[in-house]
Length: 226
Image 1 (cartoon, one colour):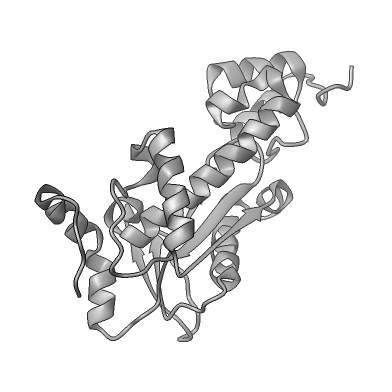
Image 2: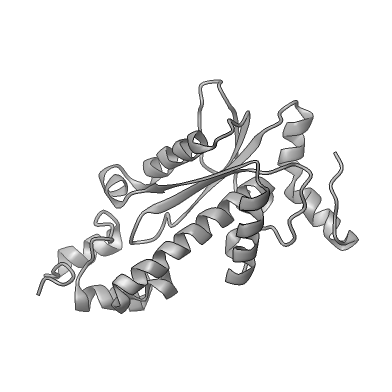
């Protein structure tokens, strides 16, 4: 397979990032999807799960785990990925589902839905640590720290992260006291102090221990219900 590079210095990094995809191609697979999530550990809002099938000969400058990239680089790569990808999907896993089941099972469910939402059916799926089973219909491989080791999973992590960050920007306008545009719903001191002062919002995951403990330890009303 011929893969073009902008610089020779980037060749080794990119070849490592495509290792698992290249192995799958050598084994006879053609449509390889990566799947990842954003917001799994957040205290608020739905989780976003994305799946991406990349063209195997496409070069994406700076493609990497979304957590390692600046917001500007993520946004640029997001546009490149959704434009060049063979197929892209993103699904929301609701607060209700997370609270009713648990975040682990909800993540699994979201990954199945994201794969099914692709308009092209993959024959191989790479996941970041999570194990999926398509009963022989689709081959799967779980990779620890896959978002840093697989181009397809890294692309999915970027799509999921950018999609969810855009949601948190909207939530920040709805509930400006909580700083969701800064903390993205994670458990910062600012966030906990806002819960104590202003109450919990409809976005908060009641099953998550930090929120659950605060609610159990103090009489905290729902946001706006004073």
